Image 1 (cartoon, rainbow, N blue to C red):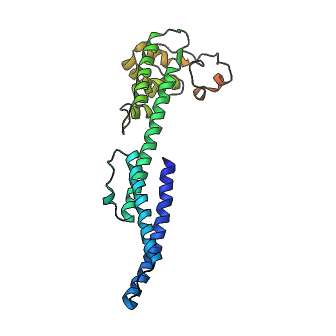
Image 2 (image 1 turned 90 degrees about the vertical axis):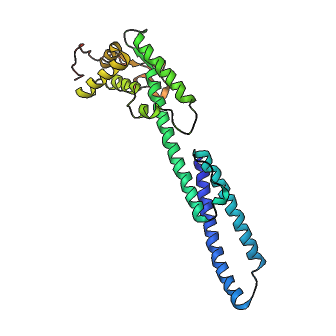
Image 3 (image 1 turned 180 degrees about the horizontal axis):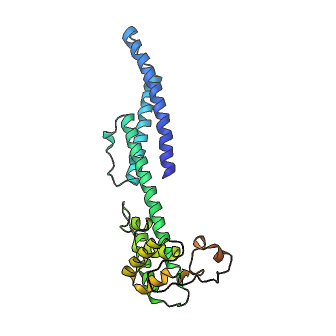
Length: 246
């Protein structure tokens, strides 16, 4: 898609230059016709026809590209009758392309958040039910996002990508429990408890949840997993009180 747009811009530049050259020739010929009555040459007439064909082809490709990248209905060809109008159409295509790239970036970020949640295990309890329940929600949402069709993103993608979704907040608490400042740690702990239960919130806040090397995608594995070892040191746990990680 990016290549198609780049090719269109290059062809637009070439057609624009050919139109400028043709305009100069037509001005000269018009003066000759006015002063001497000499008719335009066959080569000039063919150049005019070739310029029209080039414009028509470029216009059709631009309209098709905008239709592929945007929910905006395709413009009617007859509505695009000049290079200035064609340039505006190409700008529309560029904007649609930027929007699609931003959406795809957010979608991939959201899927990564869910993948990381699905890779987690409890350090002490292999069958920790609260974690399994949250992962079931993560799995269902991942499938929904993956299968979502349409011009707009799945409703949960933006919140996940920006860390505002309950599942994203859970992951933030799990991965940052020892580094978060006390206020944010406490805020996330309460939010997770409200959305997923106190048991999961406490385990997340105490560093009891960690990635499993057998569940993670290689690109998501910490260095200790890639090197074939798992850090044995378990961070000190906290009491059930409201003190933070520090």
